[in-house]
Length: 371
Ligand SMILES: *Cc1c(COP(=O)(O)O)cnc(C)c1O
Image: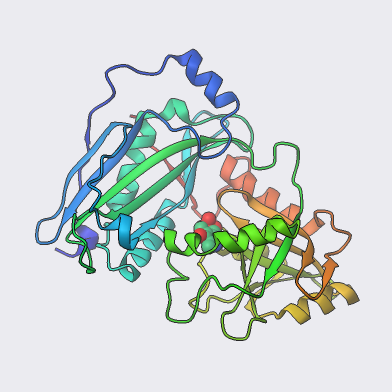
């Protein structure tokens, strides 16, 4: 059988004592991001030769690790991030889980990890979210953030693709990214550090890419900026990404607005929000394009008004407008620094589909079957 057709059944063991409804409602009223977790998790193990086994949905609990566990030393690990939404009619849907499942496999391949079959990825979500359905918030822009991840769990300090791997799925109720309204960010162009180089792991969703970004993020904060913008690692001129989000540039001086996002060169993370916005932009009648832009073109476009809006996109914040840019040699504003009309129209279009307020014409919403 091919890896894609292997069927993995999760054995469900609910917690003996459930969180009282009142306590849960208090948590859901103000969950923040990534600090509280639902009552269960999904876990599956893989061994070279034996394949996947012991797939369970069980009470959320710490995972004890031997100090010699490979991932703690060599970071052989990948992750995903996606959201479950409460629809107005009470049903629960997940945005494009098949796309995350496919990316999880691609990331795993790059990190020499086994590829979890896409059906098992989605099945883990269905089982966990079905069981923890009460943890899916209903407030606007609130959601249950899903974090699938996989790591080298073999106890061995020799460097090699791990012979034992653990897959885990946890769920974290999350509040609105912008509780006081969408707020543009100021970005720092990092010319000292690179996120990803040709041939590296930039296109894989792996924690090491983030570990290497933290010092640059701290430098951005020292400069009074909210986020880092990454440039290509060779010429340090081509714009790639912002923090953990993809970037879009809006040129609104022609007959119809043109959206441009940096093309996937292998050093960018192929965002599912990015992909969705390329489709929605077309639906809204804009020209959409995957292209290239240098720092100098960004600055010149803002100066002559041809580049009117810039925004970043990703699962966590959906769309974040970029209001101002700063580098060691220059700083400038984007438009009038406020969220642009096209930025906000795209954001609303995507949020409406995710919330069930607009028809799901592209078949992006996956309904979670009731437990
Ligand atoms: C996850 C991620 C994104 C955004 O991907 P989405 O699928 O849209 O959430 C962009 N850049 C990086 C570096 C990421 O890790």
